Amino acid sequence: MRPPTAPADTRDGFPAGDLSGFRSPVTRILLASDGLTTVLLQALTQSALTPEVDGIEMAPGQHVEATARGLLRLATGDVCLVRRTRLVSRTGEVVSVNIVTARAGQDARIDTAMRDRTRPIGFAFAAAGLPMNRQISRVGLTSWPQDPDMPCAFKAYTLNADDRPWTYIRELFSPRIVPPGMRTEAAAAGERA
View 1 (cartoon, rainbow, N blue to C red):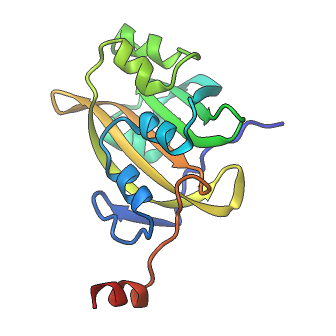
View 2: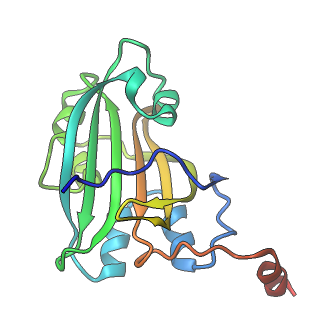
């Protein structure tokens, strides 16, 4: 079986901070949070989550997804580590699919954390003592890799040190755990009335 990967395209993109279109307060809270995503997902699932690492690869900067390339300010000759992971509950349910991109060789702690197959990436970065200042770049809907006909909510952000991004993370959330439903204009108008 081919490991699932997160699609690069989105059905709808929303500027960072525009969460009003999502019906579920759970979804809005998770997408707005600037940290502790894994902890929040563990609380929602009432389960410890373990990473299933589908791949850690070296890739030329020009071959990583365009958003990562731009936000990380990658030059043509830059080489990146790209980590593809699924966070899985005790029962084996895939709770999120994550792609993490970082410039290789910029800091040995980053390279080591990116290759850590035993911990979710945020836990690995924290254990390495890396700065965890997040800047959300986009939230929205895309296809859930486990069922491409099903929409899911996603969040993309950078981790920054001294206002310089050092990694890009895109997280896609299981539609069963994080409801992707959107408000319609009529429903939104009714809520304001």
